[in-house]
Length: 113
Length: 113
DNA sequence: CGGTATCCGGTAAGATACTG
DNA sequence: CAGTATCTTACCGGATACCG
Image (cartoon, rainbow over all chains, first blue to last red):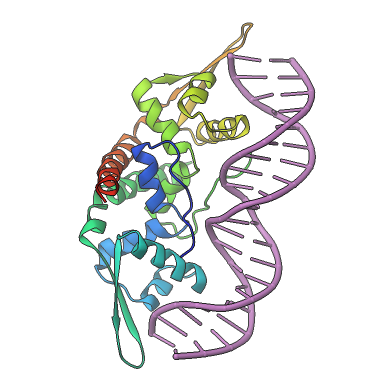
């Protein structure tokens, strides 16, 4: 597994959180999973149309490695995998929710200018 | 002014928020300002001992450009500047607060392992 | 004191091709 | 369908030197 975006150098709690959700797509992946509960690889490709296969696999893998997502593999042909939030991942809801509400306000403010 | 870390490509609210607070040091800068209310350049150098002068100036500048911080310059020798949150910046508190609480939990979990 | 200017390396992120 | 492998690019962030 490759490394994540930011190392935590100051021990500040906000830094630790950013370490998990930073990465160009992770916050959106999490946001969609909070809405949809479960997502397959091809679902994410639809939800994030401009992401590359490599980045999607990496960001999902890092979230799994961090214990935020779990991956369920069905041993069948054609293959099928499902990603969902772990109980630990669910605890991120206050963070994602706050980010969503603030971002909504911000988008409106930008649109009004 | 140089560009920020992530462009918002999907229009997702969480993305917009990440656009503002992403950057290796921004969340910590904001967190400290919520605690201290006001910070001078040299204060940040103490609070973030490992940041380079260039990065400190850049991250502060981007936060000012985004309307989150305001910069007050005193025309005197030696020069003196103060940074504080704008009213708009204050609205980020729910986000930073949620990140701080979650990060605290996470750090404890890591420490217990 | 509070910054800029310049140069540069590491790595996040992208494009494309291929596979069990 | 759900990914890897490989190569390449972009740019974030660091080091150093200098300035009003």
